[in-house]
Amino acid sequence: MIKSKIVEDKLDTLVSSNAVPIIDLENCVYKQSVTARVGQQLDKALSEKGIALLVNHGIPDEKIKAAWDQFDHFLDLPAEVQDRYKRKDGTNYGYVSPGMERFDGKTPELRHTYNICKLDDKNLLAETLPKFAKTITELALDFHNLSQFILWAMHSGLGTPTNDFVRKHSGLLSGDDVNMTTLRMIYYPAIVDDEPGQSEGAIRCGAHVDYGTFTLLTQDSEGGLEVQLPGSEKWERVGHLPGAILINGGEILSIWTKQRYHALPHRVIVPESVQIRSRGRHSIAYFCHPDNSTMISPGDLLPNQTESAEDSSDEKIYNAYELIQKKFSDTYGQRSQGGNES
Ligand SMILES: O=C(O)CCC(=O)C(=O)O
Ligand SMILES: [Fe+2]
Image 1 (cartoon, rainbow, N blue to C red):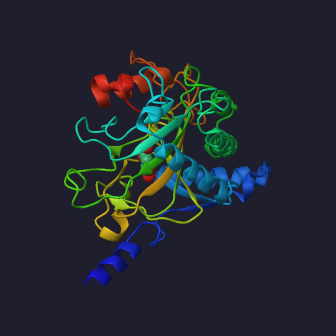
Image 2 (cartoon, rainbow, N blue to C red):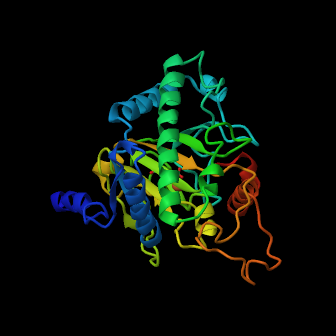
Image 3 (tube, helix red, strand yellow):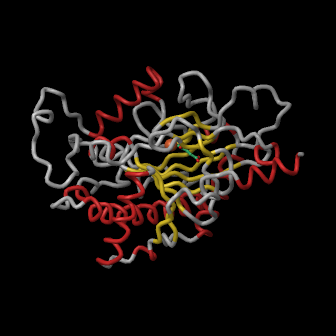
């Protein structure tokens, strides 16, 4: 009985049933034939499923593992040292301890995260853990380069006549005062069933959609990630393809494409399998955002977009920064000021 449950846990995922498109990035070579193919595949995947898996993305596994190791070292530091790096109100960078985030406004998330918003972040633990700063910064640069390749491919897939879409992401990782793009280290501790508050009603990460253009996610093992595919309210387990990076669309991209691309609802539950939940889980999310001052007009990215009666209505158009702040306060109320990016 127990055995068949474990087998079921291994098989019953979107990855194992080939329901997530896999896109080969060919190490991100900037060849027109490659960006055009990747753009087309992304267009199909993000419009039909809201999700895809990227392989041959060029970020070596060892670099990702080294970053997880460094985050573990950070989590081993005494609490008073960690506190010095805590995320502060009005900014997005720094350490977020379990319980600081509550996606549904009440249930604390059982996870540690660390946000990096700038490639040359002088505050990044350079004195306390020099290797942490070096390893994470190098990885952030890799994600920055990968996201730029994806932006060019998306530009091709969307068929927008100008390269404004790419240009509007000029400030990737140059600081959250300019652009909210964030590399987030994440660790979900193992769930110990008989410790109070650990399993009953607990969540690793509550249901939400990400706010920006797209998110890249890498995970070290199956650990409860679930999504709602377009047109369905059913939560489906994603599963895990070692070495692949998952991409999902965010809310700004969805508005920009008049919902052609889906903002994918997702969450991380406490896995029902004792075996799986008794393992800690690492992930890294890279949230790609347009520059804060970018005006996000519905349908702006679609080719041949002419101003329709609907567009020229009095409906207010927000810039990317306002949209994110609005989203924070819709979702978190007062917490938004010191809340989280997702
Ligand atoms: O850890 C994961 O798998 C997902 C994390 C996530 O969705 C987020 O932080 O926005
Ligand atoms: Fe998310």
